[in-house]
Image 1 (cartoon, one colour):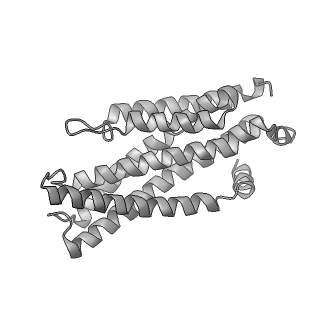
Image 2 (cartoon, one colour):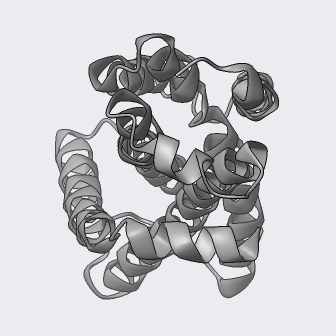
Length: 229
């Protein structure tokens, strides 16, 4: 399995993914500063605790990289089925289930790690800058930061699971637009927010979507031997 994962990583250059992640981190950081600055200037006081900042950053990061995961699914799975290039891999003396599993493991792990690192980078940079410019009227201690990191790990794992839901829609007709479009729908459902209630930290929904994504991935792996290309 590890050898298959290494071959997949070598086959699909991820330079675009790394560049996209860095640009996204910068964009999320700038948007965070801009939103909080505007809210403070208008006196709305929506960000009264450090948890509010972490929640906003976490929601934007997870939403962004669920869409990135859909692009990975499209490139690594859907396009190979649509172009029938996956027949070449299926002709090797390797179990088909392991081939598909290796692709989905890469997608889920990349999504998890990118969400985790992006949260820490954006939130860390925000509170470092806040220490000098007082963007918000509070600071965060190292202990509080590590407490939030535990939550970030949990939500990153849930997002990695829910990102696999797009696989179901893409595999129906081997459609790249359906794959990416379904990820946008997931983002709208799972990361909507209003002043009275936020889906971003609603644990039952996040766990439910993660479970659905894992079941879809399991079904795709289990049924790959019976699929007619």
